[in-house]
Image (tube, rainbow, N blue to C red; front, side, top):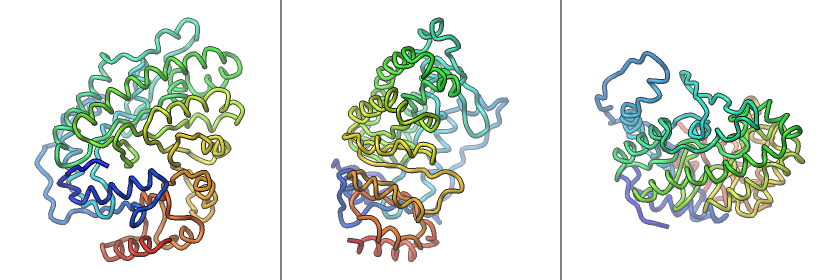
Length: 361
């Protein structure tokens, strides 16, 4: 574990020890726990306000966004093992845009427009362009955050969706679902081409963070020394286990080998039938299970975490302090990260919860 100093997280090294134990499916003095509080003495800097004629202009004003991000991250106290992290959010399909898709900007998110209408005619259009406007904007955004964050906070990677989600953006998810039956060779060929492009783009930004003496992190606020990311395939909720194995499983396993640390984003009950295949990936370190809207009863999903621990994969937990007994009765502290604890109103509540978690054996 590398020593680092961030003014917004003076106890970084102690928390980093807990996260390193988590990655090793172990536990230090206790599992890492994320708790944040507003800083009572914080005065926001005067960065002004801006008006825009389009959502696109607002999204691409990365100078203003970086200043606002730096102010926002500085407004919080990072209690327990929370980390002051800022990442350059350019929307969930930015990698597909770097590879040729047009982009729709809305108030709160973005959408890539499908690029491949006909596989034979359009296959060659989907390739990484590191000189494209959107790649350069993301690069500039990252550089600005690194300037603001030096010695103060951690800067992460943008949200990247390679693999099946990338090809779904290139083609449109419904069309891709049909392609698995009608055009399987094109799909497999594109997955292979895209994987090489993704590794090149990922390495460009991850190496930039490492050169700035940052750990590597992103939208999920785990971090690691070296390559870390959150592999995913939200498209997988639309397909069978057999299709997942044929088209996507090997690519996800290869992605996990590429990283030094990884946590799989399993999104929604529709993707649960792939869990055993994912837990069998040797180089996958941990599981992030997102139950979906209206299915957040922790007691009803504890079996998923038990299955992950049986496979020696770490787990990311969100729960209420009233549910800690359920956690203690069903899981081990090894490889557990409390990404959020509900029911904490003040530091006294936090310290009581932390003492209970530290006593968990």
